[in-house]
Image (cartoon, rainbow, N blue to C red; front, top):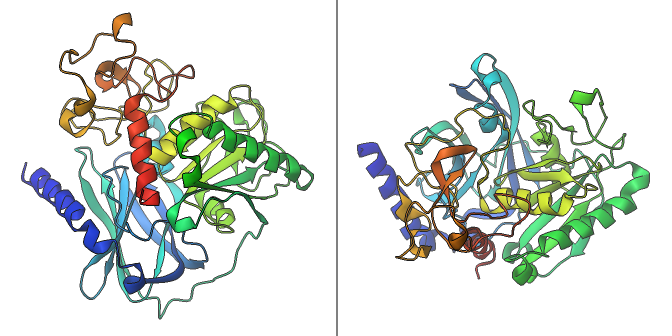
Length: 427
């Protein structure tokens, strides 16, 4: 209870002092990005970090007036502090594929390593970097720390994977917009025209649906022509293996439709060719599948008949931290959510702390929990089933984009998306 109270107080203080920290980019940072490469190693019960190296990238695209992420989202966060005064000057929350793997049966018996990348504006002086992992109770705990001195670091400023970047739609400066960057995966050199067309169509998919549709001018769209040797992607369950630039694959954690890449370092190498807040990996395949990981990346098939629906759904995960609201489809995870703690996702609740979620959007006459009856089909309520389980986790609507392919974003998910847009644009 004491630890929870301390954590709650720290979040309140972080939010209170955010305005003081949000106007100081030029005091603490200069142009460019400090990229810290690490490696995750661990099992279901253990997590270790190993330092790998530093790179200097050109393009910091995030907001300059809100350097401290105000959302209590993600399975991880990293904090950047001035090493002399201890002042918090940057905070970012995110998820990783490694954390998902830790909930699989394989992690119970095997230790594995995953590449990891952290990026923040290039600091003017020595900084302390802290990486925090969220524990089962929902509390962030410091897992790794290191002191970085830009005056003594040998940081390669070049692109390890140089490719042409194309502006598809630019509506303003990167620091005032949400910058989406499409990366080509499984496209040969002769297929780059197809990739650019696919990327443009995919952007139109996102902005065909509210609330993105009404906020299109808040976004910039770019694409990187990242050439692969082979077309397509790996399909291990069918014995199909391709040599592609980002090493994507179906059958992630044994689940056929789950397409990801474990090679996040290569993803960041390719993405470093342009500005981005959100990476979207577009895979040159007609096979159904994809994935979305909060503030990590989105990925989906370019040519499937359900590409529009999948693309929007996965972007909801990666951009706004929305959780899956379905509970009848097969997944690779074991007990992904702790039913005794409140999920961090804005559209899921265990009712442990419902006041922190969408309680303010539930009308007084709506029962909580809310029965899944036709008369409540268009009502914001508390419907049991979500987060891959049928009992103990609740979602805001009977149906939603995060629940099925047959619906649009519900009011709760829409509010979360709009809040994230305002965080990036200052609107």
